[in-house]
Structures are given as structure tokens and as C-alpha cells.
Image 1 (spheres, rainbow, N blue to C red):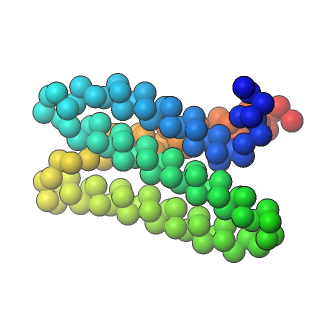
Image 2 (tube, rainbow, N blue to C red; image 1 turned 90 degrees about the horizontal axis):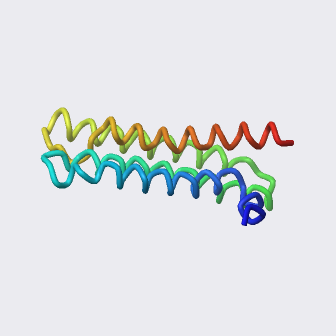
Length: 131
């Protein structure tokens, strides 16, 4: 079982583990739907999905760049990833603070995205130390 996981690129590994972490985080904050805080699990879900999508895009770029050898797509997709992340954060902050629509909790969104980032860092350090 570990063999197929190690054959995946680090971006796909991050997306897979982040999916599990986001699911656990979403289940842990599910109480928000039964209280007056449905924005907390919504923020976890949105931030987690953005993080997972971000690392899936990185995995696709790695696979494409191996064949072509041109780093232009990497730069473009990195910019697209950061724009997507910033757009979601700014939109959530705008809805929360300016329009007073409490659909997504900005802080739970950032924590869920940070979970993907921390997963990537841990996997990178493990891979670097195991070689």
C-alpha cells in the first residue's frame, strides 16, 4: 500500500493527505450547522478545497513539464494558484466585513488552507531526509 503512495509526486501526496485532513476538520466543525455558526464548516470546506485544488494543479504541471521541459507553464500556474487563493480570501473577507454576509468564516478558511501547506512542508521534509 505504501508503494503506490510513494510513486505519486509530492503534490499528489499532499492533495491526498490534505483531503483526509480537511474531511476530519469538516467533521470536527460540523456542529456549526446545528448552532448559529454554519460559516465555520463552510470556511473549512472552501479553504480545504482551494488547498487541495492548488496541489492538484501543481501535480498536473509537474507531469506536463516533465514531458515538455518548458517551465513557462509552471510560472503561469503558480500565478494562477496565488490569484485563486487571494481571490477566495478577499471575496470571503469582503462578504464578511463589508456586506455582513456570514457565509464563510475567513479564519477557518485560512486554517484549512494552512493544513494543506503544512502537509506539503512535512512531506517535503520527510522526502528530503529519507534520500
